Length: 358
Image 1 (spheres, rainbow, N blue to C red):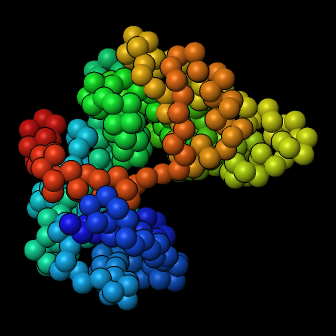
Image 2 (cartoon, rainbow, N blue to C red; image 1 turned 60 degrees about the vertical axis):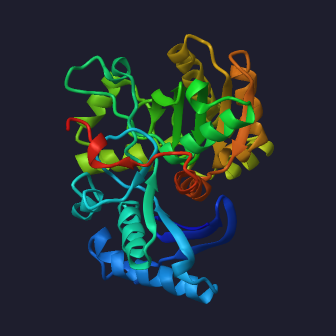
């Protein structure tokens, strides 16, 4: 059965066609600033993106009525458990962007709109808002501040399921630590099928090419009130102008490795510091499963680097075997979730049923 996959991003819309889990077609549709300047809000882009998706599929020779399902990237919703979700009218309320504007919010709505027009099922899989943290992992030292779940859930869950299958176990029976290493890092303990603890994104943990990771608390408070930055500038600093970029003037990990190879000792020190903080996060998360870890998986774009994987394997290989699954597998993960449902291997969740507090 053919599955259409849609993954909206800030400056592109990635689409792919799968026959079950075999990729038949993939296209990265880019959107320039000129293309998007007439749309003040993300959802204003809906019609434009839908039309260009359908036009691209037509040019590629696909008859859209042959698709059995449409899977879209899930956006910013209430915290929910992982899994595949049927897109319903409650989820389409993402149009209101009540949890913030993000291009991924378009994924569910595009999937439902196209799916409804052709009589196909529409799904989202492991959206950004997946939250399976165990209660004790949420508690911080300040009662006003709860530790959030903000990870690369789609890639994490896919890599976890594929790892479990490869080692001959069910995901629900595995204890894994997965480190997604890219422009942002997220390192997560997967215990018996749930992401029970971790760091990354808007939480603590290692710094990355352009994000700050965890910071020393007292100096951070002093910096916030120093008058050097306003709130908006601080937010931009910690989420896009920190990490390698702040220390070395570039967020390109491969450029940093070229500098290291050329003898740049400052580049080596900063790069190794980033990897050292990642190794410490991996080590700390072993406690989430009492040290009984089946595998440590290194994934994300930076995991293509032998320098990175060798460094981390040396630091954390004593905990469990380390495997590398370099890159991101978002399109494959979306197709796999829809395929499991179509094959009767997974029952899709209903969004309203699993909203926390309802």
